[in-house]
Amino acid sequence: MLRIDHVSKTFNPGTPDAKAALQDLTLHVNRGDFISIIGANGAGKSTLFNAICGSFFVDSGTIFLDGQNVTMQPEHRRAKVIGRLFQDPMRGSAPNMSIEENLVLAAGNGGWMSTASRRERQAFRDRLALLDMGLEDRMKQPVGLLSGGQRQALTLMMATLSMPKLLLLDEHTAALDPGTAEKVLHLTTQIVSENRLTCLMITHNMQSALDLGNRTIMMDQGRIVFDAAGEDRAGLTVEDLLEKFREASGHKLDNDRMLLAN
Amino acid sequence: MSLTAILGLGQTALELALFNSLTVLALFLSYTMLNVCDLSTDGCYALGAAVGAVVAIAGHPWLSIPAAMGAGMLSGLVTAVLQTRMGVNSLLAGIIVNTGLYSVNIWIMGGSSLLNMNKTVTVFTLLKGALKGTAFGPYFALLIGAAAAALVILFLSRFLRTKLGLAIRATGDNPDMVRSSSINPVFTTTVGLCISNSFTALSGCLLAQSQKSTTVDIGSGMVTVALASLLIGNVFLGRRSVPVRAVGAVLGAFIFRLVYTIALRFNLPAFMLKLISSIIVVIAISGPYLKRQFPTLRRQLAVRFGRVGD
Image (cartoon, rainbow over the protein chains, first blue to last red):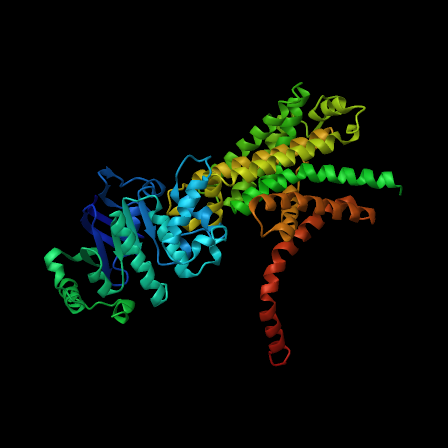
């Protein structure tokens, strides 16, 4: 499904600020995998996502998505098959456009000059109703009026509307209050399992990293230092993860939020 | 001053407002929707006037309209390519194109900085002839202006609801979102600027043909005048649906013209037009900003002058 082979990326090469953000990283993801990704601040988790999405081109290595070499493909081309959510709920939708307009845009049905049919709009309403946030009755309101949680839920809906082959979640509940975060996370797992999406999720919550999905990887200094699936993963506890991290990286885990969350 | 004179004055103001409202609608697309301040507007306006005049003088009154719009589109394409493909800052791209167009426009007008259309058959003279003797006789220019503005509003209302139109709006509204989506911002910016510049050129073309002459300076200051009109319209119909806001842009052009005409009646010299438009733009943009800053400013002043802040 997704094959990342020996990918490296250095920012500001040749300067004192040079940072090897990804170092010879290899990751193979199977169709239907739900992988949680944890790691310290600056471990390269978001950089990995940026590399997959094409926010920059990698220095070396190859990225195959669904059998196609996308290594040098521009971002907007890859975005057709990738859905992505950021930590910042403001990033995923256009505030001055209505909920409906945002959804029409995200669905991407029809040609450039087409408009949404009544049936399409009704389908949007029905899907929004599943969120149970009352958004289906606010279709004509600008997205800017929604709360952060509502907006992130909407973004999730938008990202999955066109059935992406790959869903990337970059700490997408971290900026929400605990109750809303739980709700959005619940929606996420629901949508992912119902549609059998392949999903990578960065999280700072070690417990949910172990609870959710079928595989957990840990990153440090641009490398994958720990990768567990199946039986290896079944009995793991948060303490085990912390210990694994010390073993693999030779230093303590220093993600403040990650430690506070546990 | 007699009633007919006042009405005549009102009609001229209305005509000018309608012609220029097309430029306001162009900025509605590029500035309000796409969030690009297109500083090539002045040059593009004169480009439309020049191309329209040359084609009409060559004996093709109808062709002059699409020719002017096509030229505007081309100019918008250059501005767009500069800022999306060649690393030129968006404002600078407009300024560069604007400067270049000055030479291009004189070249189009055959090396002269002024073209006369006194004996030229234009869309205006054609309609004037057709309406001669009917009740609409004196209003031929008004009809053309109104028809053009209505068509552009209709087009924009419809276009901004299509997938492409929504993509253009999203590009202006949340560039972050668009960058990580399947929308190519290079494409949407280019399409947006091509369309908006075609309206700007149409605007210049119609004004030149209605006044039967054009100069290379016909568009000078146009971007500020249009921006002023746009922002005035925004005050009245800003927070509404897209079609209503487009109508608001035209309304803004009317109000701007009205204020200007009245000012002229109070013996304000005509050359003050541009200063007035500059001041209106400053007030419209800085007003809301200063209003937000006011509480802080008041506290700072209170501290400075020894009074304890409230």
